[in-house]
Length: 219
Image (cartoon, rainbow, N blue to C red; front, top):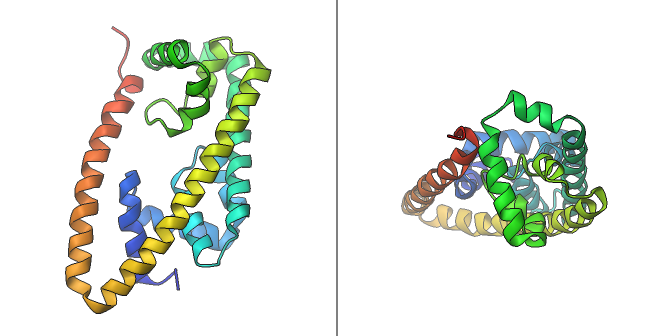
C-alpha cells in the first residue's frame, strides 16, 4: 500500500516541508523496507531526520511499530551525539584548525549556550545550521561529560518522540489526501503541490540563511 506510486508522491510532498524531495522519500522507504529498524538506528546515528518521519508514516500503516521507531530514533541520536562529543574532546581543536569556517558556528553556539544554557542543550537537534556540529563544539566549550549526557539523553528522547509522532501524523494526512486524489485527482494534487512547493521554497531559503553561519569564515 505505502509502496505505491501515489503514496510515495504524497509522502514526498509532505516531506518537502522539511526541505526534502520525493527521491529522498523513495530512498528512505527502500532502506526501511529492506533493513527495518537497523536502517533507522544507523541513519539517526548519522543525524538522520527525514527517515524518522518516513518511519513514523510507515508505523501509521502498520509496517513498523511506533514505540520501536521512537526507541531506535532515540538510541541512534543519543549514541551518535555522544560519539561526536567524545571525538570533540579528543580531536576537536585539530578538527576546527583544519576547518576554520566552523569558527563562526563556534561563536554562535557559545552565544546560545551562554544565553540559554540547558534549554539550548535540550533543543539543539531542532535547529538548522548548528545541530550537526553542536556536540563537538559543546565538548570544546568545556561542558562536562555527565552534564552533556543528561541533557543529551533528555533532548534525544524529546526529539525522537516528537519527530516520530510527526511522521505518524504525516502518514494519516497522506492517507486522507490520497482519498481526495481518488475523488478529485488533478485539483487535489495541483493544490497540494503548489502549497507544499511554496512552503518548501521559503523553508529552504531559511535553511540556507541558517547554515551560512557555518559556511562563512570569521572575518
